[in-house]
Length: 248
Image (cartoon, rainbow, N blue to C red):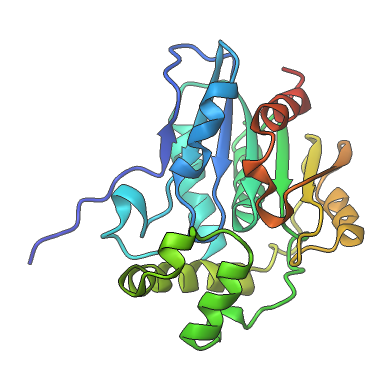
């Protein structure tokens, strides 16, 4: 029986030999590393842009998806710790916010806490509202995802692509729904910046202050236009703000 060749979790989106800081991005449910490809043009000289590639998408499409946030973070942090030491800023969007948070804890425990943790379009750990969405029938499940704007219209109407994408999307939403923060985790000491897309139907702005509880460092909230997928709007401004959280 042939064995699937596994590829790495962390990808470089820019070519920088000795970066002053690495911005490491964690995609949303169903998202791949290339979701942050447009950010590369906004990253200044001397900084590196990296993104995590979860199994079950992109060049890892043949691998089974992982439906556990802690397991995702464990794999990503292990690869990051094998890189030459250096400053990091973690940015996670939606599901990626939780993976980035758990990764920050693991890096901290290894003595390499990031300069900052940036979380986007996500309620604080353990506060997801619709924990049964991954159990919905195919048509209902697909319709809800399309309504958020994260699936291209050409894909939304393509039955064969839908069937290919549904297992990975369900796995990601299951990971999000079943995630619970580890009991007794010490707060981070790095600053945490939360980004909220105005009008996001999944995230109530008034609940985002709960992210302050994951750190003893500073906390800030930035509200941007664009709803749940605001990260595709005003990319240059967003990248500059993310870098500013690390003092870079």
